[in-house]
Length: 289
Image (cartoon, rainbow, N blue to C red; front, side, top):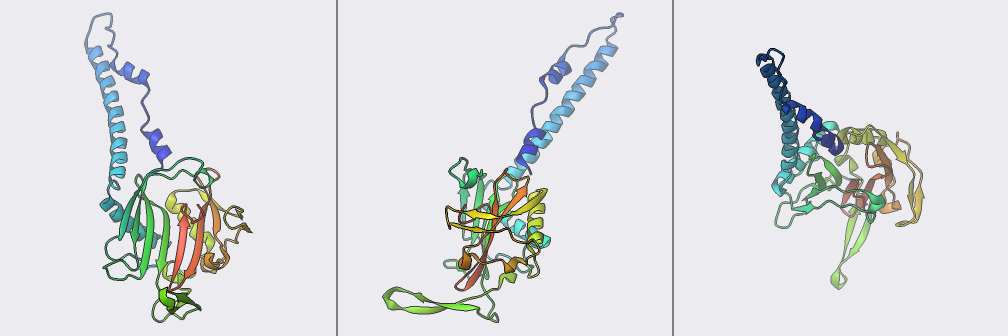
């Protein structure tokens, strides 16, 4: 639910209307009370209707907030929203979590210019599923989701996926450990385990806009003089999402502005390939913001 729309929906009723509803009705010339009773009844009914409308909106707002008011509720809602993303086609059909969340963090609202581009971060819960939870069974996917306490929607996501045994490595590196030990680690490109292989940038952003309730989006140039001292031109929307340059190779990320989001504040999409897994990052929690 949109906070501004909700606020307007349950805004105060005009005081003059309330006063009029309770104003004693004048008697007619004959002193008859039948007309007075009728007018009082109409006013009371009008006031009751107004009160019922406010109450109904308030119940909806309260219920929506209460739905994600605890860590347990946040985990439940996060699971439901992952399913929504699968149904919409944002995620691949097999992308899902297994087992209980590894960690749930209550993240307070943040405001002020010290945050990236002055973005306002609403109160949310960060719900995490690890691919290698301590004492638990390994899972193919890792999720770090920030879930809005009011709308219940995912605000940002970091999604990791391990490869299948049949996947062929596309690169390798030597990892060094203590006491001079080394181990060969492999890179993969199994991004289609996270999102459909035929997903274009335009379709991906369009689905996100639909999910968040935005009216559209603009793919923008990325100007990053503070973090990477680099600049990337806006990508063509027909580009396959998995063909975007990778953050781990080129420090690349896609900048996108959603119409109806906080004015002039970008969101981000980036892909990364790390030793042993691939990663998709999207939303307003990009590593540089």
